[in-house]
Length: 241
Image 1 (cartoon, rainbow, N blue to C red):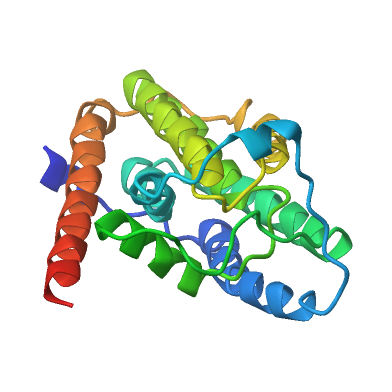
Image 2 (tube, helix red, strand yellow):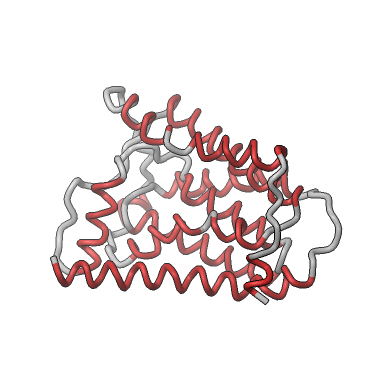
């Protein structure tokens, strides 16, 4: 069943390919904006709640799982208009986010070095080393994961709810890893909600094919399994370093 779904023809007409390619071209500009705004006055939208939240390196494993969230709709959705609108929703999220990054450049509430030892501290330090402490408001981690959950909910309600829970954990992880402020998370949720209203709420199309609906939970479990293998491989790398 899962194999049959994965081998189904993917909708690759220009109306899908153009927003997909545009999205892929847009993503690397995240690093360009971080470099461009590095010498500008940086803001810190810190709330009292942010100062009460301690750094918790174990949340780094949840935080990095964000990278998988866009793949869930990509492997689940085969209806052309649905996947097109999902890409457009992501384009809206990232475009609005980039404008805010330029207008209101921020600095993350973190230090350059993670205090402590052990696998999770090492794992989080790797994230810090790879991700510049800029571009916080709004949180694209949160917005991207929320859009993915909302898109998947149309294919399978249970998977949509599970993906929503996953997005919520990612949101929590952003503040426990000191990658984002609480305000960033709230803004990311609102941004995802706006993208859903504009592109996904009234997405046309017929009933979801039964094959897609039945395979969706297995695809999600497979994606989590792949991430589990990555974390296990990271643990081995930590032991061998």
